[in-house]
Length: 175
Image 1: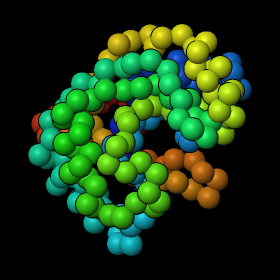
Image 2: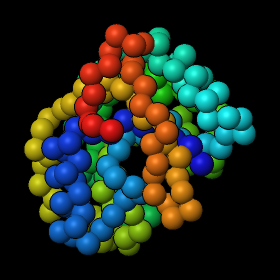
Image 3: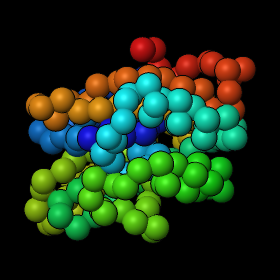
Image 4: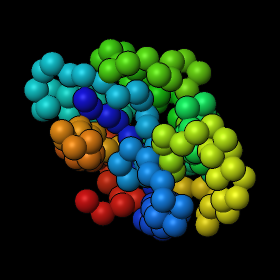
């Protein structure tokens, strides 16, 4: 399985990880914003990296505004994120790259950062209602991480690629 995502800034990531620990919950890997659904890739990782890099050249860095805590059915608690038109254009540009691992989001994907998976719906609603607002209102996505997962379900970063080409190499999170 492969994924294309954006890491939140360190302060937001650390805050979400502290919340996870304090409430005894976890998401899939460290906090991240999916930029397309997880997918299978049958060619080389280098071919995938080059393909993603080519798509990213046509997309500039963009701001993600953070909203409130919400839930999805199935016991998921997430922090709503709003990327506007730039996010939607990038999401749709990355979709044709490969078939999704499984259709879980579809065309109505809601940008978000997951805090908890696997709760009952009631537990998820209760947790979302008592969580504090995020310590920041927004962040800028300047680069994209290409990741895979290992047998244990951990995310492994393969490459970090700038939006808009090589001139935008400022990072939001150290490698």
